[in-house]
Image 1: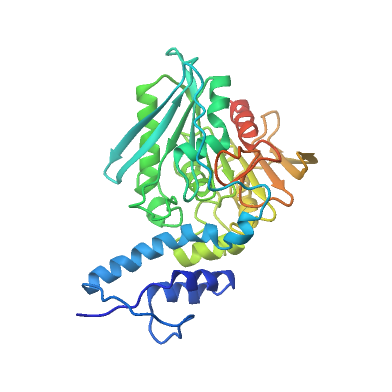
Image 2: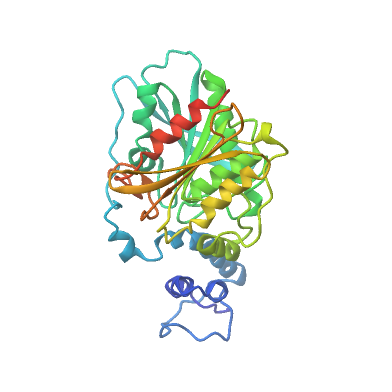
Length: 375
């Protein structure tokens, strides 16, 4: 029986913090002739080589999710971040928060759908929200307060849920090229959930939007690129641009430094630019703020836009807001740089994880940006 080494995840994360990405990946792959980072313990044999490789593959998939907790001590000391709390269920009277599911050739996913009390079969907008690593639909809904806005302004909100079988840390696998193109992988599942809701409810044509946090933000950027006719606008909070990575090593590098090479533009002309709003803290140690600039640059590459920059402060958090527009059209691109903020949803509720209760209300600003776009 062949014996394979155990996966030293803690050692890999330590190497990543030190910027030694190649060494971290090599350690995860269990490559020989590399001195251990800690005394070795007794290791149980793996039943077969194929089983060992499968285990290593699962570890690699989960490693990216673990990167969101690279420095847990420092993360928990962030006064703007609340973690470890049970999500509060805020379902106003008359509204519903239903659990549903969708399946296609690429797989199946559960999701939750918020239906506001004011829905009576009329055409209303739909917002798709993609959670970050380790989060759930309930957690994300509580943290962003998006259901409260949906009840007040009468729109549907869908929360697709990543399966642990797909990623041990429940991250959307945005760094896998199989999930970055139209009608393939997770992109096809998210689009399928969107279409299913549009079939089951009266969704106003041209009023479908998508947003996400961290890995969910990166997935939202992919959806805007792969399905520009489906989503009228996208929101990316603390995420990365479409195509920023193609595998685990490049994902680690992109999260730490930004994409290694200039990213191609998404569209062929200004008329087809998918309106995009971005929020990112400039003290984010999980996803470098360079990625926020790349999300905007990727969309701007296909358009000749006028730029206006303003500065302000909300709840003690200073921000720089860059607005880009084309002639008489509403704002096409918005970038909010949150000074001193970390990896958390700005203006969120402490009832959810990865939230910064102080600062601009990212949820409200995203809805304002979405709804001002022409259908």
